[in-house]
Amino acid sequence: MTNSKTDSKAPNKLPTKEDYSEWYHELLIQAEIVDNRYPVKGMCVWFPFGFAVRKNVYSIIRELLDVDHQETQFPLLIPENEFMKEAQHIKGFENEVYWVTSGGTAPLDVKLALRPTSETAIYPMFKLWIRSHADLPLRIYQIVNTFRYETKHTRPLIRLREITSFKEAHTAHATWEEAAEQVEVAIERYSEFYRRLAIPFLVSRRPVWDKFPGADYTTAIDVIMPDGRTLQVGTAHHLGSTFAKTYEITYEAEDGEQKLISQTCYGISERCIAALISVHGDDKGLVLPWGVAPVQVVIVPILLGDKELVLEVCRSLQQKLREAGIRVQLDTSDERPGAKFYKWEMKGVPIRLEVGPRDIQKGVVTMARRDGLKKAVPTESLVEFLFGEAGDIQAALYSRAEQFRDSRVMGVSSIEEAKAQTEGGVALVPWCGSEECGHQLEDKVDANMLGEPQYVSFAEAACVVCGKVTGKRTYMARQY
Ligand code: 5CA
Ligand code: ZN
Image 1 (cartoon, protein in one colour):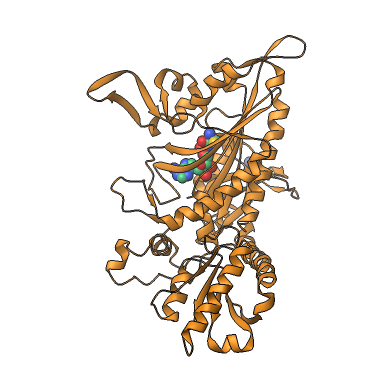
Image 2: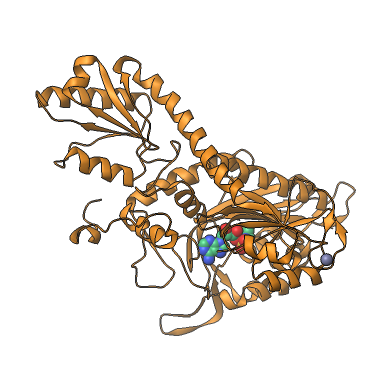
């Protein structure tokens, strides 16, 4: 897109990533991800380029879930009586719900909620669909928009009032244990998803006071953002039989007895794209992993000497890459090569190929990777070479991001240290596990408790609040 409003003024220079917040907001516009100027607070417009990134990212989620989940779609509106049934759930969401109260000029008999999430839309249908043990496990998901009247500071892709890309999965099982296993499966799929985006993360069990309303427990995935604050980019909830009781969802067990199902749900939103942009981007703009880049390779002709020849070589190169399944674009616009480099760097294109008369003479193209590496590659073996580079780029992005993550997590042994560490990173804090100590911690450290790290164990240490010896830890951080 070239006709966005931003073109009517001289393009602002992108602030350095050091100024993360300004950099992020400016980058969303300049790289054409989302436009935050829509006149409703907390609601953004996807630029076509941003939407193309979203499409590629979400096709990974679909691929990972489609193995054993079925994609479906439920209505946006939920009748008040269904929405109000589950008390704990309501308590968690009542201040965030938008209501539809009239149809035209007539007030509605039953108010309708815009879904903030879809438990109360889906579970009344589960009651109709689930009859016997043969119907279990049931695993569905949908990718829809949801609405939350967020009162905290809204931010594009991070804290929205219309979440446009809410992937919510809902599963039903015969036993509590099977549902617990499903939570692990969900975390594995999400882990794989973030690995494909080359984004390192932290997994933790949220403290009880921060679990999903109505859940037995919540496991969360967080990403450390450039400023050291964390972003919760996915959650998996064990719902036990709480909703099953409320919505009377039972199945006939093999012994003929009617039993309550156990449930899980797990969600991801466009926060995954906020993380993608923030973790990999640099002072020149986006840096996209090969797998999700709408343009994987851009060809920039260096139009010197025999221009027709240069263009012809470029076109045949484009054809060859396209046939190999590479998303390739030949930039034949009138801009100077330098301006083209700048533009495609901003868009995060992983590889740029420059083709000029000299390259043609030598039978090579000049390859420039978005992460800096530059070299001449024989045209003959270009396709195989590019696929090799794609793997290298992925590995390089991941390892750079991993170094950053690891540098921002530190074990501490006092409240003061936790306070200092959470200024710009994540503190790993010895915590006995008591709610009392937990609240005191959040108070005194002035940061959030993300909860106990999963899949790791620790040496004994003294709880920084009460001094009791414990093998437990909690992550603490300032959260987005
Ligand atoms: N029903 C469950 C699982 S689908 C649920 O709603 N869980 S949630 O409330 O934790 O939301 C799932 C994920 O959506 C969160 O982990 C977070 O990454 C993202 N999310 C939550 N609120 C917002 C928001 N206002 N804007 C953008 N993303 C959000
Ligand atoms: Zn304690």
